[in-house]
Structure formats: structure tokens, C-alpha cells
Amino acid sequence: MIAPEDILESRAIVREIYIDDKVKDYIIDVVHATRHPEAYGMNINDLIAYGASPRASIYLNLAAALTRSCRGALTLRPKTSRPSAPTSCAPRNRHL
Image (tube, rainbow, N blue to C red; front, top):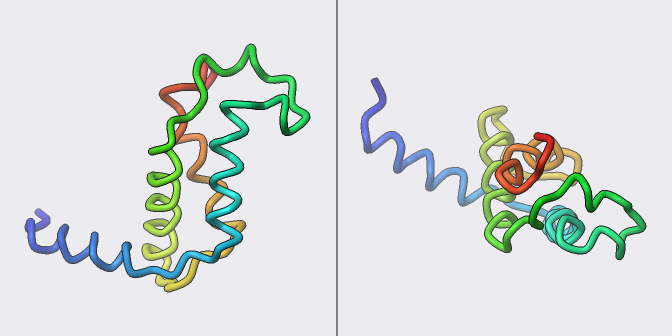
């Protein structure tokens, strides 16, 4: 069993992971693309019920940082945030 103190400590560690500005920009682009896919040259309106909320970018950052911390890393590079996107945005996507 995990003690509440361990969870709080883990949260603090995740929030201290350095997130590169390129990752932040990428995450903002992903979220924005779900709201305005035509601005990104995508014809996916039939796949998205509602675009991701602004909070999705917060949770994508946290999910990516958590993934990196579980692998022992203290930095977050652009490629490491991609696997988290479908999970963080799933409630608003039709086919996930």
C-alpha cells in the first residue's frame, strides 16, 4: 500500500521536472489543434466531438512529466510528451 505522504512526495517531484519550452509549445499546439484543426491543415472534425479544454494542456504537461520521472529523468524533451496526448484528451475525442 502507498502512504499518503509518498503520494504527496511524488507529486512534488513531478512538479519539479524541467519542461522545455518546445514541449510546452507543442502541447499548446496539440490542444489548440483539437479546437481548430483546420488551422493546422487537418480535416478531422468528424473525429472530435469537442476540442480539448485549456486544462488538457496542464494535464498533458503533468502526464509527460510523470512519465519521465518514472523513467528516472529530470528533464522533458519534445518526443516524451506525445504518448500522453490520447489519454489526456480522450474524453473529448469520438474514437479513443
